[in-house]
Length: 367
Image 1 (spheres, helix red, strand yellow):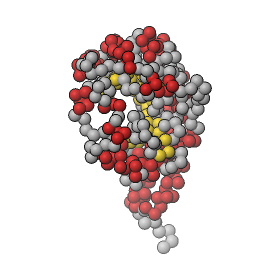
Image 2 (cartoon, one colour; image 1 turned 120 degrees about the vertical axis):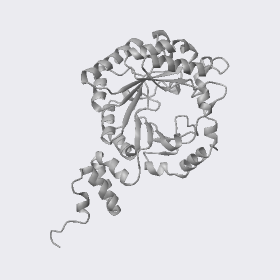
Image 3 (cartoon, one colour; image 1 turned 45 degrees about the vertical axis):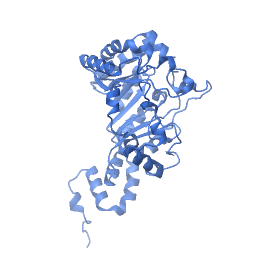
Image 4 (cartoon, rainbow, N blue to C red; image 1 turned 60 degrees about the vertical axis):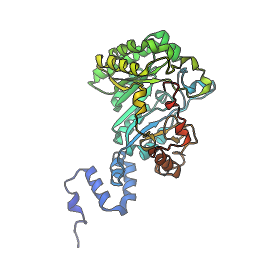
């Protein structure tokens, strides 16, 4: 009949554009391919498209867009890279192509796995694009040396939710001996400039967390460091015992063994000091808590995408990659036989050898 309204018109009248998109996608599966083409052209619509397909936000995504770091930290395997190593960063189009596949399902994106994100000159654009896709929390893990006042302002404007700064000492001598190539005074200037930029913008974000790797050489500076972090505007602390990622790092002398220290008492002291300074504790190593932990959730809710596009189920994975996002669709990787078997075996508490040998669950060291 001429002028007749299409079926379902009344069902979508009065709804917002995104609500209409959801409703139509649910009502007419046959046009989903066309909707996906539209959504890719308008990134804000991608989350709605994937919700219509029953895919909710459940992933914690860790992603490297660079292949390098500006420091040579004692506990990092990047220290072993050749001096001739050339820094590279993903082109923006490559980041957006991968992000459009993965981020509609992400509740968290951390733009760093094992490299320095601020070496990417387009990092602010990456953050902005991730927020356009509706990612609830977008963060960076950085050593902070490249966090100039200009970059702080750019990241705030882009909508960065969380900033984790890796720092392992309350004194310049301790910090600079661990984070080789870093300058304590420069980091202090950068962090104070971040505070000032947030105040000038009237912004509460990014939420600042400090990441502290506990070594023999910095054990005595934990409580003074908590005080320093509070003075720099931190909201939270994350303490981790040393995990040796590569035998060539020669760190045996820095490992604290379980017969040398009461880790439960240390965790209690950390929590008490942080509470007194108004800081949350995102992690404080406690072997008693670890011994009663549920089976590892990483294979079900976490994914690492490293610089070359390889996909890992966690940061401690030492086996062959489960796929590569430069050559495969992310969902084909996520649903592949190897990934499904890994999830099923871990959930059944019969984890495969790579997980049973995970360095984080060693019995002799406080890992």
